[in-house]
Length: 237
Image (cartoon, rainbow, N blue to C red; front, side, top):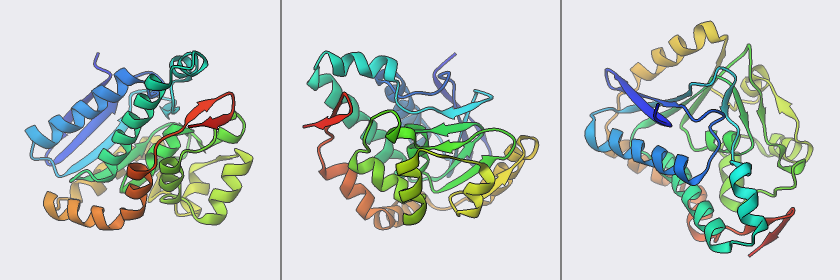
């Protein structure tokens, strides 16, 4: 089974993440980016829905089992290349010329929660799954682009509280905080998301232009600032 695959339902491309907890590592990033290219270049889809094959987890963020040995070995080149490539994924989804929808059918933790900030719309299941940014508890500071993506999802008050406490938010709490567009039991979630997705059939070039303007500040944070290296809880350039 591919780590990332997709199918078409009319003008909606449904991308499924098949990588277990869908943690980001170099192989996974390349496959994800490759599928996004394929959808854009080889289909006429105008809407993208991203869901997880994992019944419990949408994405748990960085693959620390891969990353930490690289950092501990002081392999700066590999670490930087990874963070630049992760930024490529964030940027790609943020500016994707299709309307993008995160169908969050499980936990969205750390980098997974941050990734949701690159999407145009988010829908979350109510019967299972939390939204959490626990970096304060695992001694990993936010990189500038990551912080900008979180601010695309959360108000300043929510970001302040979540970032410094590492607390978990339920789907209902996310809905109340206007972080998601809808929250449904898993029995309804896919149907509700598809109902919304099928209504979104906009011209790609117009969508792309609007996103460039909407996300100018986020793109600046992702594009301009050199990702630092995480090492034992401290940032090192």
